[in-house]
Length: 196
Image 1: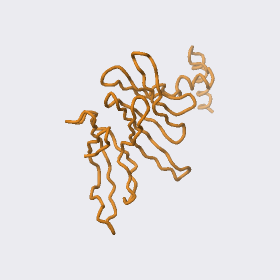
Image 2: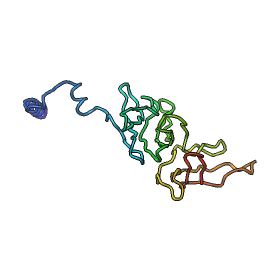
Image 3: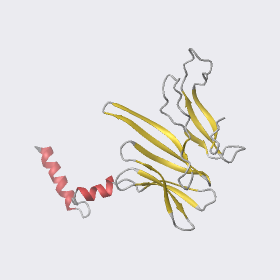
Image 4: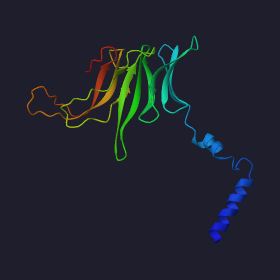
């Protein structure tokens, strides 16, 4: 009885304080529950463009390239509201953007989540998967699509250094299996997609 009375008094006192009164659920959601309008921003090395990951009104995110000279905007990549999430994008060169995407498959108790790195040109063309392709001969599919270590690889201005997880491969009945396993750093050329 005492606890209920004390809670009622505290609630009454708080609602009497200006600015703390109940403005309705909508006002509280706008103040405390709203999504960020911009998730990440990256400026091109030349300084003439930027890419911003922005929240869409109906849910999901879009990577939008902004041209500083003209003020024009161009969406280059979009993620839906339920099955994928566009986490961040960065200009690596003036002609390449790298984005990290979280993908979700399944429902209920059978949900699988994994990340992938994608690369796209600032005009929205040449969308490619930067993450290492999954081989059908591995014991399991890696859910980690890699992470950027360095946007400026030594001796190659069009390459990045990225983490990659190598799953072990089955060797029975084949002579073409790779013996790589575990976490590694690779140099990946963004134009040719060659890996070292």
